[in-house]
Image 1 (spheres, one colour):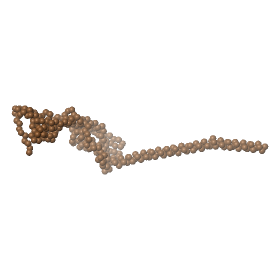
Image 2 (tube, rainbow, N blue to C red; image 1 turned 90 degrees about the horizontal axis):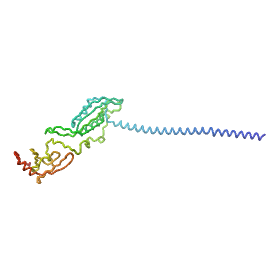
Image 3 (cartoon, rainbow, N blue to C red; image 1 turned 180 degrees about the vertical axis):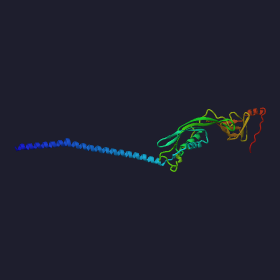
Image 4 (cartoon, rainbow, N blue to C red; image 1 turned 180 degrees about the horizontal axis):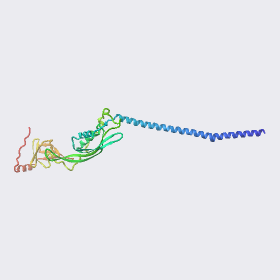
Length: 317
């Protein structure tokens, strides 16, 4: 009987231990493990969020520093009010020299929540250097102007030479653009005149153009001789006296010295001993030099013409 009771108690203990072990292994431990895993995943998410916040903070700080730097280096003044007549007078003050034509039209006034501006349309004809000078001053003026859609093309303008009455060719450019003149900016956007900082000159574009891209390097058409200068290609060298050379061109005589301008060039040297005049010519970008000698036969023919009198040239002492 006692053995039966002991066996029963032992079996009961085995059942209890098995039940407890089953509960601990199959129920309690997975729940605890899942809780631990959830805690680890939450920690990872919190760590990732902190890293993202640090990255966002660094980016925001960089933007803030850049914005602050720009704010401290403002150099454009935007007035609260602006008269269109003032804009036109300023633009016309830049066109007093070198311009053949300057037309400006008001397109309209445009307003946004942050700023307002007038828009103008400009069409002009001028020398290339004058156009460059105009754009340079508009872009670097303390007043806030903006040029858009600048278009440039070469053009030849012929004007009468007031001395000779002959047409003179002017190598110019036609150009057009739209110009915005800003005013009435949101408070804090524009700097006052007192807050404007001077811009170091070396940070600005050169005030003078390095090259005129619209002037042909080599030309096929030569400019007219509107100043009626000596054209050595049609005239004849008839004599050299001292430092002076005499050329006959039809019924006209030209007396020149070293360094004098001639059509398309200049006189380089006069050699009285060898009766040679050297000239330098620029024929549409093609440079050349020529040695001209006295034409004895032409002298004789000129002397034989009726009504032609040959006078000696007075040499200056």
